Length: 454
Image (cartoon, rainbow, N blue to C red; front, top):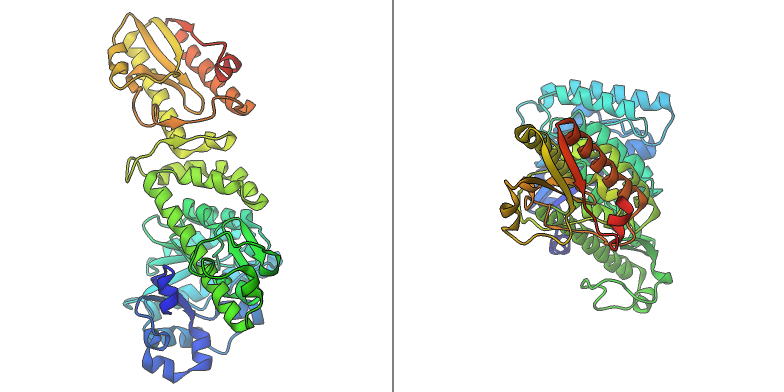
């Protein structure tokens, strides 16, 4: 446990059902913190995974709940019925039975000091996921929600199924309550789950992979026998070579690979947190999408979720960094979409105030110096700027984040990005002409994106 904490984890999950089977009364007497030797936050699962794997457990729901209370868990889960990857009829039954048990558990958990988790089920049947989440959101005695059954899809790199389930559930769950994603521990999927509103995760992948000689990286999983070099600088990889790991006793190799895997997962979560801090989570999603075909497929879907992402994105919190735009996916960046919507409303308002006249659209390239925009306000011509990914920016908004705090490729922009900018210019010109403006469009034919746009 000291090594787990040293790798960066102050919260762990263990299985109450397995503690009951292996230690029984001893675990209850020592408490889960004592038997693990871990004084951080401990979450216990009820044995639902064993139901998924083996078809049942030897505890009733009441016994599972009472045992978790005796263990002294900080966060605990009712004994739900996981959906897994099954047919429609079985999925419906798992959702109905989980809801029944969640209602039944009220008298057992209401008023209890620990946090109890309501598991959302439904698997790949997203209408069932939504139904499960809707019902759970009405059960006010659950202070945390979990999204179940992703493991089978994660093992197959079907990340698009998992993120769709998260999105469907989050649409109906209370925004003020934390959400846990069961069985998710691969660095490739974590940024997308966080972007959609997941707060905590658990996974045994680090040790399960290690037992099979599998080595986690931020862009996929390798077998240790296939590696000539270790692309990592964690304490394990800094000390050993692939050859040395292969020649070790299996038990020691498993322990070291498990530690490495933990360090990689922890580093991934720190990158996510820093990206949130800098307002660059969307850019991290774009970068991650290039690491594996499965994440490229997920990124192609993220545009469908952008309204919810924008609603959940903070304005101006943390360290504000410039926005990086790369290609088509950047058009869905919540910060850029929000700015475009604000700028478009400002164009309408200022145009009404002017009541007609002359307007000129200029490319925002080169970028004005600080204070230069203010000197352009109130002249004989109303000045508006245009730029890829942002659209049209009235001079009154020039300098507002991120109009001047943005980097993008000056050449080779995808046709969709050029078409998007052209469409926004046409829309703005139509608005201005309808308000009685004469409009002039300026551009430099030597600049690729300007010539292509015009």
